[in-house]
Picture 1: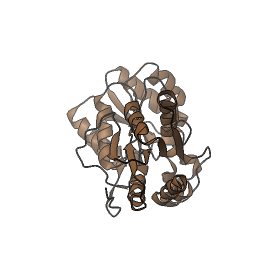
Picture 2 (picture 1 turned 180 degrees about the vertical axis):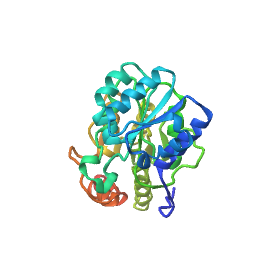
Picture 3 (picture 1 turned 60 degrees about the vertical axis):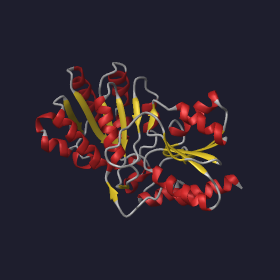
Picture 4 (picture 1 turned 120 degrees about the vertical axis):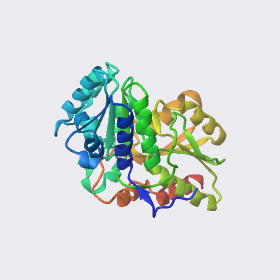
Length: 313
């Protein structure tokens, strides 16, 4: 698969447009924001349905509790803000109000990972997936591009229960075609026989480019894309590990508690396999462009290639 980096679309815009489409068809869809509607793109919903949009201001705990209250009346609330605020400032409300009660609340965290870039370490959520995946009743989706973000928002709106969807800040090249139907199963992007590479979110593009380069070096990589961190498709991971007996995970997140941890937990119990996790190594992010930070943390295509070549030597 060849990625065209000259053509990019905004996953945040996909969120806003999907929300409008669902709102047109279902009057129970409502949207909430915490004074960031221009950044999260809930402004698109606010323009179309001003009576069903609620900006609570810079009060994220109130954002979640208001969403929970709306859910209790039969509404389907989508509550959006930056990922670091959506999961960090609101953890108690998500845990004890939304998840404990199993309310039908959809939390959308935009601006996750080191690709938030120049906003710096304080705004780069590197533990949001870990926080959400460890909560009972919560579902966690990390889509990779415009089309998959659109599909993830629609999937969450059509299924009961709490959802956390992490949406990238940056515009991204297309991997998937519009009209994608999302399922909880992992996607086998490429088959291979030397090792298994597992990723999700915006690092999928980097992994695809890395696989193309590794093929020229005689290294055959099986690439799995896992947008669902919870529920987790153990079956596909185990089958791939049995074929290749070496697994490498790549994630725009701490290596603790995210995708890599889910893979390690699965394989340690079901089919013990060597797993190498590439991500942020128990540290905070830094300020820089998205590209600079992907390189700094070893998450760009060239860094992934170097690491795999080193491992296979």
